[in-house]
Amino acid sequence: MNNPLYDTMFAPHAGKDTPFLYLPEGGIITHGAFVERAAQLAHALVSLSVHSGDRVAVQVEKCADMLALYAACAQLGAIFLPLNTAYTAAELSYFVSDSGAALLVGDPARSDELRPVADAAGAVFATLDAKGGSLSDVADAQATSFDTIERHEDDLAAFLYTSGTTGRSKGAMLSQKNLISNARTLTELWQFTADDVLLHALPIFHTHGLFVASNVMLMSGGAMVFLPKLDIDALVAWMPRATSMMGVPTFYTRLLDDARFDRDLAANMRLFISGSAPLLADTHVAFEVRTGHRILERYGMTETNMNTSNPYEGARRAGTVGLPLPDVELRIADADGVELPHGETGVVEVRGDNVFLGYWNMPEKTEEEMREDGFFITGDLGVQDADGYVTIVGRGKDLIISGGYNIYPKELELLMDAQDGVLESAVIGVPHDDLGEVPLAVLVPQAGTQIDLEMVKENAATALARFKQPREYRILEALPRNTMGKVQKVALRAQFGA
Ligand code: MCA
Ligand code: AMP
Image (tube, rainbow, N blue to C red):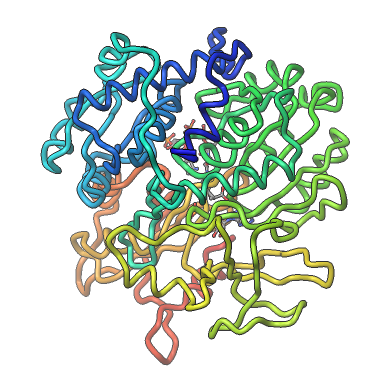
């Protein structure tokens, strides 16, 4: 093979007239047409001076061309760097300059705001959306085949930025092997075939929608109902023609809130998969009562792709994330990385072809999270039972997961601390019925001053993507601290958690 990722995921579909993407507006893109479009986009990238090894930053609303751009990058050997469409221009500039991206592809409607971001980072700017854009215009005029550029399985395929405890996002470098090995394992384990039709309503700028869902469907040769976002009416309409769905827990609680969703509607479905955030055991049970299906929960991370899964055949245990994947080694370890016996709680560590190559330009961060024997320290707290089932019981890392999106309190606290009249701050996650948890900011005013909360909210809106902005604020005279002076977030959660 001369380009393992392209040759495994895309090349086998050339010339096939089978449906690959069902578009909500009624169109169908066949496997063959998708491969041809990827080739056109690869030519368009070359015409914009993108070369093998270059980073291509992409902040584009979910559409078929965005997925084809991922394929184009694979064929050209460029590194695909998808970015959350909710990110503000301020957030985006960091990713584009930190990654040294050669090209930023953005939403045509945001050109005025995004072009300066590309210019400042020395990147070329192009636009793309479901209706067209400058990249699409260039691609339209290109040949529908492209000579695949040679790559090795250890070459980089994608960067996904993931926030950190320091508040600075880190570019997780994923190799071709990382993506291929995990997609192959999941396709086999979950028994996906060319007969499957997956309801795809996740964003494609994160591991879940891009690598778990799309790569598995590319690997299996099946089709996807490619919805731009979660839309319960659309799920209800398409479900009788689908066989499977992947979603974050909010997908399942919202489906359960809709009376149309019942056993009959789900009669053609063979598999519902949940991940990215904890699925409540209650949801698991309610779902089975309503539909007869047991949701299959799995667990992963940007840095590692998927690590564990409940079995396809065999017991899917509510509240657990299942067993380590066949080619993933997993241990529950103490602070020194020493494996603990089953039944004891410790940090989840994993090793295998799924584990990323490190953080871009941050060798010291990579070293901090990687053991000498190759195990990656996930920062999640887990326990394994006698049968090997893993339960995630908490997070060692200070992380809030809201509707499947990660929010690192440190990033918000740095912003809050810089606001006029704020002496210090702490951000915690509080329970939320729909999104699991949402951020609440606790602010301490400087002596003799009053905090202008409206101003703080405005500044947060300029700096932070909407999903990260605190949903609530509380003012306290002082933060609770332990004898070492460390802020006691446990106490804050106890005080404001309800
Ligand atoms: C939207 N909003 C949110 C979120 N999403 N606020 C907090 N958390 C969120 N996740 C805000 C919007 O800014 C807007 O604010 C209001 O909610 C409604 O926006 P809308 O777009 O209509 O929201 P929605 O369509 O209802 O979206 C909620 C959602 C979506 C369906 C839960 O966020 C989603 O699809 N999440 C999936 C995320 C995901 O793919 N995670 C995987 C990461 P306002 O009204 O004020 O303007 S990969 C991963 O975690 C690992 C590797 C793994 O294991 O998979
Ligand atoms: P990300 O940084 O977006 O890759 O998020 C990865 C984190 O999501 C993991 O480290 C876990 O904390 C969390 N996560 C993913 N899947 C699950 C799950 N099924 N149950 C609990 N937490 C999960």
